[in-house]
Image (cartoon, rainbow, N blue to C red; front, side, top):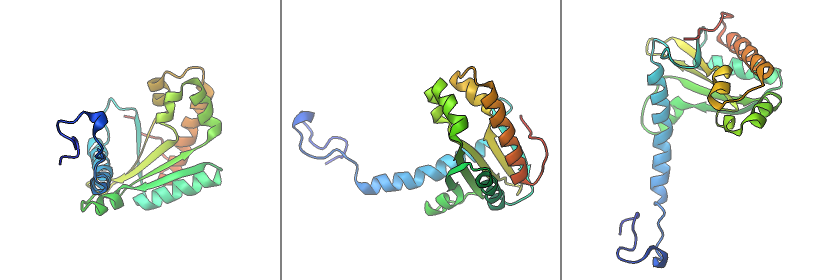
Length: 189
């Protein structure tokens, strides 16, 4: 019996067999998917930075990936910003029997800034809460990357929220500069 069509020759409404995939397939697919997505994201960024047509802000960190994300999380907590999740993509890759250089994602948000944007256009919820990725390049350089708030506004057609975008941009620049230990202005390709 094939799980896509458990009752050959029988109308679908009369078939009593389950059409769900076995749970082992669901688990193995989930364990495989996360590291693959992370690997593709990092390979697209490459060691030389990101594509010139991207809306990413990328800067170099003087710390390890873990130290950078730890510092960012501490700064966010200090400012009262909610930490939603921390994703260790390298650990996810390891569970799938694959290797990935250190790569961590921090997801965080401030409803006072995000809600007005979502009131303008709910699809921006696909990109909110904000995310910052720290990753180690093939040459060992640690990078910090995030999507520029102006790109999110443009992508979702949000208008009339210039003050919110300005606040988000300033906050992300300052927080990521502090976490990266550089204090340098962001490099925007």
